[in-house]
Image (cartoon, rainbow, N blue to C red; front, side, top):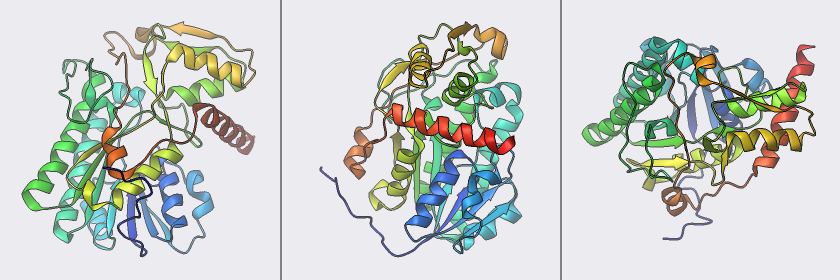
Length: 338
């Protein structure tokens, strides 16, 4: 089935609720939807999001920020009632937070998703649920397809709490769709990167770029042979928007990611070369960063057949362009703090 150039299934303005709307991905999605004539409410507790991400939207008449938690029913339910579509992005962010605060990870992810789905069922609203490539766990079949079986590490290791919570989120969402008819779409993000992202919570590319700009060693965790496939956030939000506007996506799971697989050591070398930095990659054992018994995925590459067939979507922005945009974003952020 060829769907390139497909028109959106709705063209009239819609009302969107973006949970985590002041976050890295959420802020880009807010901008895209507003540019297409929709109205947007962003719900964010600002624990990892920032008002700086949405500063340019503060005077937009079709945008509103609500500061609050997704686990609070009294906040979530009325907001869901007033919109047409919910994009549920809010979640615990980053490997470091997951390892250090597993209770917060589990509570925020699972309870927040439950509140969103319950409100959507009551009011008959569509939900797009953000999941993660983490759900593929220790799988070795690469590239990962949406219907692959998954293998997670032991429950004694906090590393897998996030993957388990996002799997439960997916089970909940698809159960609401099957049992109650709630229109739900699940999308799994693979290493989304780009402007406004920070390395504060363990994200590798912004950490490398910031270190290179400061002429510091680039800290590569492990032996650097683990691979990832990066996708620019501006491509990712196009995919999310497309899924929101496509009836064929309801009740299904979609990978969103890039196609180039690169080792983390090669990524560090590419960053220093592109930014003409004198920095050098330095290998740091996982145990030194995250403590003993830390597990990592050796490879993470998506099979994009399903989203190509449904939307005709392809990532357009190269890793080189992303590195340039991210470096400019980090420079501006540093200037703003000086």
